[in-house]
Amino acid sequence: MERAVKENAYFRWFMLLILLASFTVTFMTRFIWSPLIPTMRAEFGMTAAEAGAYMSAFYAGYLITQIPGGMLADRFGVKFIMSVCLLIGGLATFCLSMMTGYQMGFILRVATGLGAGCIMACCGKVIGKYFKPSERSMAFGILLVGPTAGLLLSNYLGPVLLESMGWQGAFRTIGIIAMVIAVLVFILVKNEKAQKADIAKVGFFSSLKDVLKNRGVVLIGLAGFGLMWVSLGTATWANAYMGSLGIESAVAGQVMMLYSAGGIVASVSSGLIVDKLHLDRRKFIIGCYLILVVITILFGLQTSVGALMLTGFLFGFFSYTANPHLNALVIDYSGTAFSATATGFTNVMFQLASLIGPLVFGFMSDATGSFTSVWIVMAAGPLLGCLVLLAARSAKKAEA
Image 1: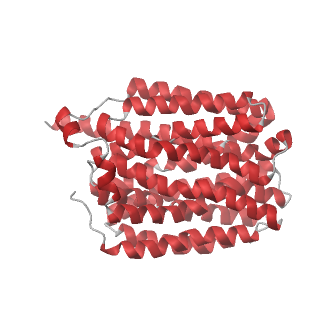
Image 2: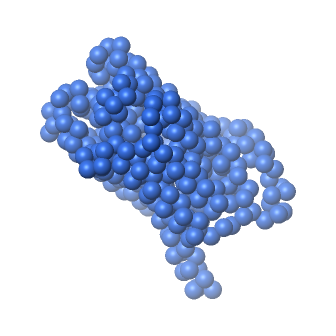
Image 3: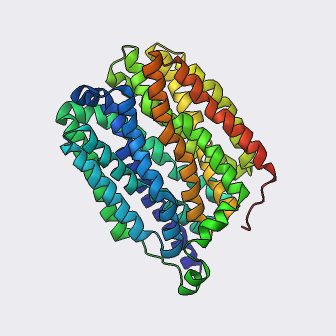
């Protein structure tokens, strides 16, 4: 019995490692675009708004498969869904190296997003199943190293690959990495489909209906929208902002690496701290959001490399401190039976900001010729999130 418990403990950490690799590579496929924007704009004659639309194109595809992917994971398990979706995303990214015009690239970016869209829901399902409520902030903290690690790797590899292999080689390399991880998921992940009795009890659409009626889940989705508004806006446009200051792309990449490093430290450490000290997740997030409002504007006021590096690390830290607890709260409110559907649904709400934000910020940059107003509008996201989280105080949590 004791040996079986130990094996299960080892297995859940192994699964979390696989989830982390899968989640990280989806962020590499989406964010490899950011360090390539200056080159691609020159190559294809894009405006800032058109370049931002490529990031929005990814999220258009990403949003489409979030909820269906979660519903399928709740019903049939995660192995097949994850491996196929990673393969689609990797193949579409590889094919971007062969784009000959704006429209072709736009379609491939949508396809890349379609592949990435199911991954978070699958991750939520696995964490909900293998980790107790008191451990989920920690587990999500480790998983959510993925966004910052993906951003960091993209900002490191992007300029290097661009210099050595051109933009075509950058897309090919990231695409191949994603396809390799897809194969590893198919080989290594244990397939755990729901029992027939559970499938009969949980209809394909009943899980979505239950989630839509859950006030806590909906409010957390809105709060996450506020966070993604600033964090994905920053990931898309921070490099361009620094370029407008005359900072070289390699140096801007270093600033964003520090931003990513701050996010990694915050994601892991805050998850451990909140779980170990049994802090109230909702109140902790509100505090993080208030600090983020200030640090967003502060970062946007900096013009020197040294100041950008210092505030960049702090910006990354507070941008990602709240992430693990938002996702843990989703499962707290939804329960484990519908955890994948709830994760997919809230991630749609989170990522609507990622779909809208790059276009809005790109339009503002084109219209004003300045990034000052962009940073102020970004800071409004977490401020909105604070108001929503205050309203979530009376929402009822599911049974553990």
